[in-house]
Image (cartoon, rainbow, N blue to C red; front, side, top):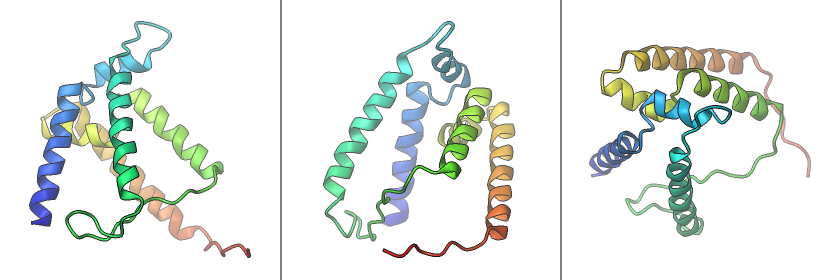
Length: 145
């Protein structure tokens, strides 16, 4: 049942990305072009997603199990550090160049979009490079309280 629910959720998410235009790199690049022919429509999509997320987190914060019985693994607050800023910057640059971020890139790949193939391939290479760099990074020791 868990796999079926996950599949259905992913399909609804993908359909939402298609309907909202998030899987269309031209639409996304129009949204990011604030100095030119700016298309603000994706701001409404993002506002709607944030609203749904806030409601979901409000109800989820006191739960230990999901509605399907899986253990809840909510994110914990972490400080803004150089790694976060660098990663966010790289993400933004990639989004601005390609017009895709990971979810819409995978949806566009499933739609047969050739640009998405290049994006997903380079995204996977970036993930592999990150993991290799993480293996070389010294283990962090927890700070004393």
